[in-house]
Length: 137
Length: 137
View: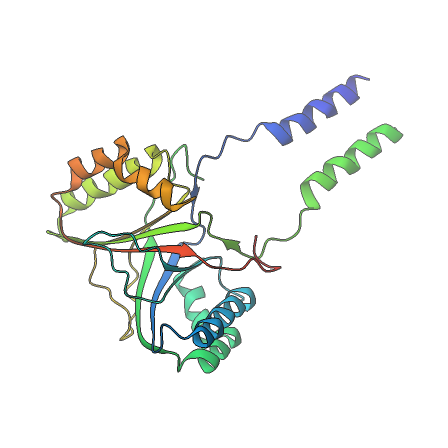
């Protein structure tokens, strides 16, 4: 019976002793942030095609750790640029993994399928410098 | 002994039966992506001050869901802009939560402490349109 009590306590500890997670550090040390301006930003066909392509890319990539795909939120401030069509942010475990992503089949297929849809691409690549605090993990 | 075996199996199941997570959708539907150009990008004092301020902001904000704070990864491609000093990407559950973040004490303190350190800010705000696939959760 003592053994059973000990094991129940062990299970309780495994399932309830983790600290409360108030917010996340976005996983992946390397962030690849891509702004895309479409040739025909009002074309529903073009938007459907690139959204399908981007979803497939994210799902099929071997290297992407986490992803956000967004459209302008239209916040009205002087410092906000709402002129782009899509913001893809994907993260990788390292610079080396991002290098591999650039040449992997899923990325090549996306470029082949959708590369003619945009007039401009602007990329910000960055390495994480965030410290892990008590509310971050 | 049978009870003990059952409990060991239960523990094993709790700790090993979760599906393999291949990648994450970045949590938070609203992404607030901020590029910062410092007045004195080579000043260690200014870099320490803004990194401390940004870490405090992320840790103390009531509304930030997830965060990435990066410095240029120096990838050498024509479409990559490496001229900025910091890329802060924070996410929120909604546009309304980002509106509250703009006026919350932690954000006001950051602007008061660090607002004189930069020469230029550029922001991309975007709403998530990513579909959840079998490899995303």
